Image (cartoon, rainbow, N blue to C red; front, side, top):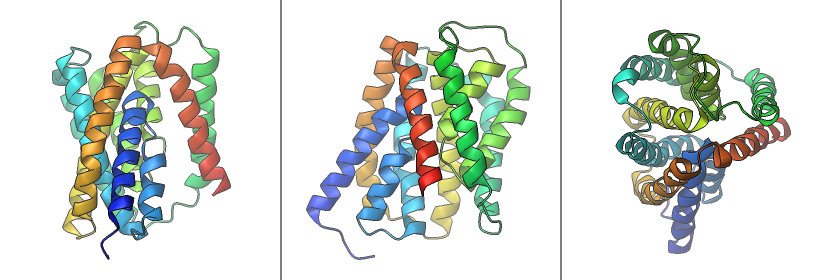
Length: 250
């Protein structure tokens, strides 16, 4: 593709920073970054691939910060990471052959359901609760399915991971957000590898936006560590509803 103007490039980096902040807190940063890439004239397939590249910087930064601050122990996440990677690879390959139209109706309903769950269960996510399944089974069920979804379609992946951590592992929202970023990074990298092998990534744009993602993710993850569910819950609800409306009105 032709080179974009310096002004458009600077705007993309600024959008990536904002997307990284939002994504580190509640997910949904792609709602900002992907339309910005399309606005700048990046073709749709290249925009999807480049979005995975820039998003990987943000999820990596947030994950490292959460691990460093002791919010998540990566050793107990090895199983979910492996299953998420496998699921994302399968989804990335499947999307090339299958039609995803039915997801346009299913995903908004699920996201609105999760939004209502977090909105009307005020104490859910404030403290750790009863663990219903083991991390290994969580990886098999949630890691594989949500990883596949992220590689196949994508919108709302962070919400699905967070809901799984809260409902099935009983984690509080701050800890669930940390786990979500680790698995989101995994699914991003798995998908990015196959986009890169196909030559679809616009590296010059993605790397610049990646720097903005690093700054935004650092800020967002620190806000989560400091404020916990006070900031995560409302933004999670807003992002879920925003993604639902975008899919329904597209």
